[in-house]
Image 1 (tube, rainbow, N blue to C red):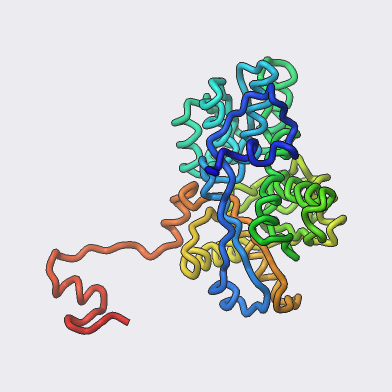
Image 2 (cartoon, rainbow, N blue to C red; image 1 turned 135 degrees about the horizontal axis):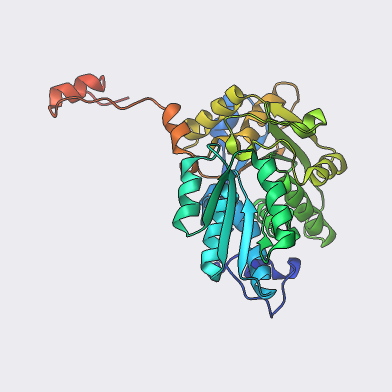
Length: 358
């Protein structure tokens, strides 16, 4: 049977009824990619898998939550939705609002959003406002606005978003024929780690899996409020998707870490960019910098912890690399020009005519 979207596939686990108008772009069903070259590069004995959420319809995991949030908003008679965003939420909200026939309003931090994400939100017809402040300021504003104006808030403080995002855990368990032993994940606003843990627990309670993974979250060094136990007033990191100083789902993330026997740590921008490059050059997987925090965390964890053969580790890659083309270009070798002559091309490529490339 062809894939019909998350709500159709996991209806029994979601807050929907036959009366819910399903708004879908056929999100979900994303690949779980074995990463053996990465594993060998890091010198790990475990099995490593990449849950590549960048192939969702708008290029990030946000689509999982948005299909449920938008469907429920439509069911309740909404005419418009609003969100604050570092980029991916705005792109997803704009696309799903267009699909649902709703107006979308987006607040973003001025100059702090990757161009690929901004382009998506604008192209799908959202009204986009840049505020002179950070994401946390934007979230505070949209929360207040949603209480005073006839708009539905679709950030992850909306419980319907978390309900949709938990389906990623269901897919991983089905793809592995059981749960992973470790789940490594970037943490920004912390809705995703909260959602995955909920999904694993629900599958466990339903008898679909026998054990639960340890949840290992990773924040960027300059935006690590949960690690440091305090709000970061001016978070800074190259990983714009997790540049958040006061996570809305802080409590949910803490619960996931503590009850799973997990941990949360920090990775530097340098470590994130290094992992970003490994993914592209060792595995052919193009993700945005924030996504690579999970792999940077795996590399860091592996230096002080032992993984045994047969241990299964899943790293969540939250968004596609085309979300942030500027950083991709900055981290890549630049093209150069030569004349359209065989000898010039061979010389530039350091190849010899008649000699097979090795």
